[in-house]
Length: 215
Image (cartoon, rainbow, N blue to C red; front, side, top):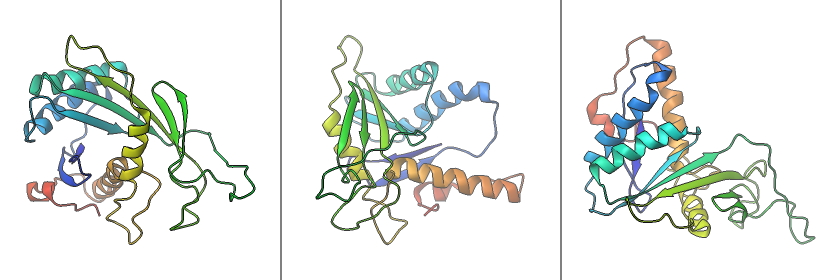
């Protein structure tokens, strides 16, 4: 399934289904899902679309998604952003005036396409957001055919992800450790699994595709 957000971080709609399928079919399913989802959007001829995901895609998965996206907008720019929370990296601030955690919004560049972003460190609004575990963020950007791929703007990437951690509609405290793009996807997966445990057959009513039922 896919959660769609606009350029301002506003949730637009949910696209997908609850039918089980074989793992080997995932690449074809990705391709179909992306094509159907992008067809529903009002896009310019040269959009820049970001695909956020928390489980690492294979090269074949990314190729299938890119092929589907280009079949809808061939001149679009497509960025794949893998947000990994399952790692053992911890970042700390040893300065005397700090509380030990790397302040929220700080990031460390570890490769040309990878950063570690602190979203749980010290901030003036809430001193503690949990264990100071940063997000590992990896990005790959694909330009239209014939145009060389530029080096990613890692500062802009950090700003984008940090901004998306301030939009948690499901909480009275808008700040959260994970961007809502992947957080809401995880919430949907949890709830869908719970529904399927209750009944073998579960279908989401089409009306709910434009309603944030998972909040």
